[in-house]
Image (cartoon, rainbow, N blue to C red; front, side, top):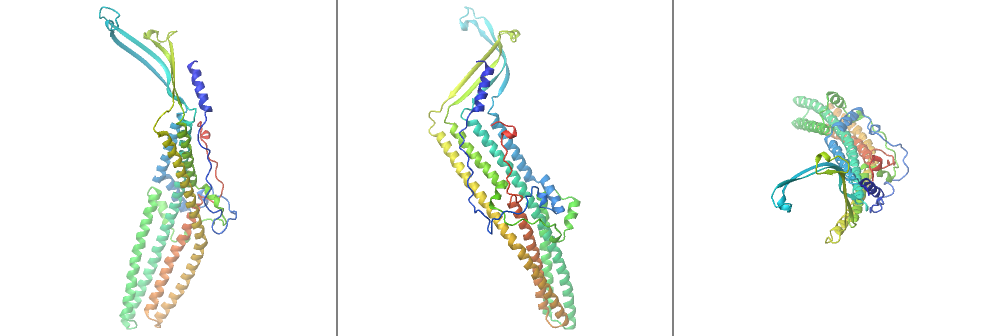
Length: 485
């Protein structure tokens, strides 16, 4: 058989070879069939682009900059590239590696050594060769290499989905970071307003003390409230600066002047463009579209593929070494007719005794598949809890915010009545101080509740996998990417 025909036959065997990968069955999700509160079909449309949800222009600008500059996202991208290269390495083992080479060997010998003559005259042995060949190519009859290649592909897909999940998390983190900065900025402005008010009240009380209408205790209380507010102002100013530092870290680059000015123009959370309403009655199986769940399943697929590789190790390995070219002891005749030379050296290796090593490797592969099944189920359970928590938040935060706004309004009326009665001399300053503190606390509580409400929407959008459509995109295959498996 000529070498080219032999190689063709080997490739044919490769392409028709079987694998010993166990049939893959997706584990049934160990979660409830519906979210707490119902499982009616969703009435909304899917959100294919994050811009459909994050509508605020400043937030979009920050997210765009983060997607372009965030270092964690770059690390994840390089990990995907490395996984893709590893898949190419495993996939390349399915094909023979063809090497070309040239050989020149000149050796000095003595005739007497070989009993060619009674004299000990020297002579030279020369050998020249040019050709190409295949070295130790394994014919994948049992699918060992094919299984390893499939496992590498599944791990590549898992890394690619991890990058998608990191991008989804990064977008949510930037949005939450911006909301936190706006909330801290609003707290600074509110505290500054309270500080100005308490400064005026302190001046008023101190002036009244000169006329004897208030006591020294009233003056001391007003002064204490003033200094307490000064302390709070520094706390919120520090928190605002730290929030900006965190936001800059997420963005991955210092904010430009235009972005900084746009951010500073947001003096309250009301100035942030509202998020679209997420429809009620979302089916629980829609979390299957989350990148982290899809990634966990691909890792499980890879563990299942590893079992095929471990099983194939029990069967004979067929390796082929072949070469074709020309050879001569005279370099001038190397390419003349009749100088052709070729060799084919197939080798079969059958494991007979290995002290249980192959069996242990198979047990390891099966144990790791069970481990990945448990990890996949835990990922689904964690995702279910995250969505359920966010849905519970959606149902309660809006009512809490309404109640908090009503509290602010009532405390505001109480404060104005108290300050009016104090100025009229009906009540001591302590009533005004209590009313002022209650109003300040309520306003800060309103900021916190509004921030939690908006942040919960961001969390729910992320927990749903970046939208609320239950459609899962088709999973790519290695052959669709131009690889043979």
